[in-house]
Length: 603
Ligand SMILES: *[C@@H]1O[C@H](CO)[C@@H](O)[C@H](O)[C@H]1NC(C)=O
Ligand SMILES: *[C@@H]1O[C@H](CO)[C@@H](O)[C@H](O)[C@H]1NC(C)=O
Ligand SMILES: *[C@@H]1O[C@H](CO)[C@@H](O)[C@H](O)[C@H]1NC(C)=O
Ligand SMILES: *[C@@H]1O[C@H](CO)[C@@H](O)[C@H](O)[C@H]1NC(C)=O
Ligand SMILES: *[C@@H]1O[C@H](CO)[C@@H](O)[C@H](O)[C@H]1NC(C)=O
Ligand SMILES: *[C@@H]1O[C@H](CO)[C@@H](O)[C@H](O)[C@H]1NC(C)=O
Image 1 (cartoon, protein in one colour):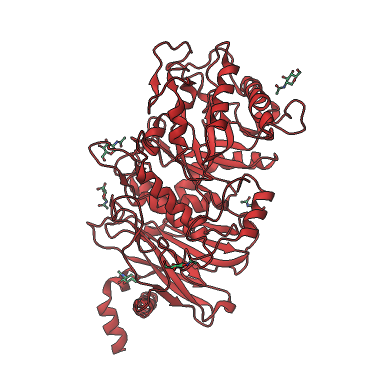
Image 2 (spheres, rainbow, N blue to C red):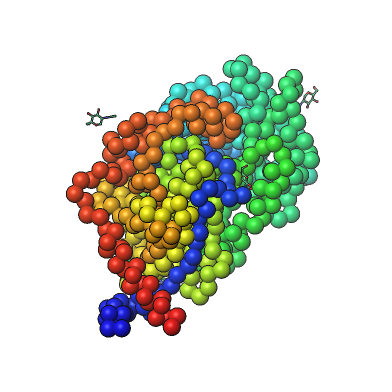
């Protein structure tokens, strides 16, 4: 009794706060676990008018380059990039425009609140685009808004430039028109405009680009992405409607549709559209993500009735350009990590987090803006975490969700995901998104009581943390797996915590893992996270069976994580840190205190 009493006194806060949640990760994928996640899944959308900010003008943007290279080092391939947005519908090609910028067209002739040809780009645009790492899969946005008599020539010309002028990134699809369901609002169209007219105009342009650009290059017709509705209600651009209008018709002279896959856009919250004030507390209730996404779940179900996959090419917590103290704080990284796992579990093929140079939601600020030098935002760490979790194996699958049963302070704040590699349980991701600011200083732990299959009893697991000592509202100082992408100043990784965190699964398969408020932990089986090797067979089989997941032509296996040895990784935290103190005993002690706390609380 005395022992328990003194422990209880020593860890009074734990005793009061001790909370637990149970989770039993199946050793093999249960029904409903996702398909294999594309290694390019955690992608970016870049607003076309802002490309120079991200990849550079006369000088390349090294921050962008380094931050993308980190991700390649984790998954073996570059993240998918969608180059699209409002401004794709303003672009016109002019071979003589030689600046490292887009030029305001002095003589625009197009219609619209902003004329559909008011931005002129030239060869430098593709020169800067060509700085994306080799093999970067690009979805390139073409102009559908422009309707002058030479519209076919214009779109064919732009598509030709895209196919001709790039030697590093690979154009894997064309998106024709950005968010066409909003064309009446921005003056791009008048009169009767809906999914049916859009379908005709889309097919007309896709056919022309196929005939004049793709076919001569021996590329198949299914290379185009129709835009599903961007508004949640009352449009005729839902996937089922576009399919009824026969947007999936075969290209003339072929037995192949022009459609490659569906191109959906969404934001969790949109300034001027969402009708409530957004707080950190609101979006870290992860149930609200599921609620917001309900409408798109119906679109996914519609896509499932077609032969085409469903990509979320434009996404963000807050559109159009983020929100200070919401999207640029550490809490947003937890939201983002959950969102990647949630959408991967739904078999969405890719998520493109939208970036502009002035957006407080962009994973990094690429140029000086708002008086700040370029810097890495906390949500970049969620890309690194997700990519190390799935690794370069081309075999990662995920199941799980937010815990809808949690109550009180933790209602909507807990999420558990099980990640499988080659159909064996490999990692369990535990998220505790309860928002606590550093200044409040009263972080509690939620103890996840895991019940593994008995066969895993006695195994040592490695833990990797997504955390920030500054708490939910911190705008810098995040770490993932002991790595900072801010410390070096150029986006290269720096290991700032070399501790190897391990725990041992009990012989009955049980394991208690405390997870601090406002943090996430990856419980990794079989070694530290981020150490898996590139799997050439699995990647080649994925690229054959699901080209949208790993397009042929993408160079794979380039990263350090993909190297044969796996031990020369400078970026992934290295396992063989001789002499590094194992923290397992320390963690074990605090778990015991917590367990006793629970017992006392129950008693
Ligand atoms: C939470 O758990 C950690 C170990 O992960 C421990 O160091 C810390 O003291 C715990 N905090 C509380 C408030 O119990
Ligand atoms: C995802 O795809 C897998 C494999 O095809 C399937 O078994 C699973 O049910 C799908 N999950 C969802 C949520 O559709
Ligand atoms: C295919 O050709 C037919 C007949 O010329 C035409 O009516 C139709 O619009 C064409 N389809 C596309 C997708 O261009
Ligand atoms: C973005 O954050 C900066 C501070 O870094 C602030 O000055 C600016 O107003 C913010 N813009 C938006 C749209 O939140
Ligand atoms: C946490 O910090 C944010 C931003 O400074 C603030 O809006 C919020 O009220 C704080 N939360 C608490 C519980 O103090
Ligand atoms: C690992 O690094 C060492 C030292 O830089 C080098 O000699 C060795 O060849 C590397 N091994 C592999 C497999 O890259």
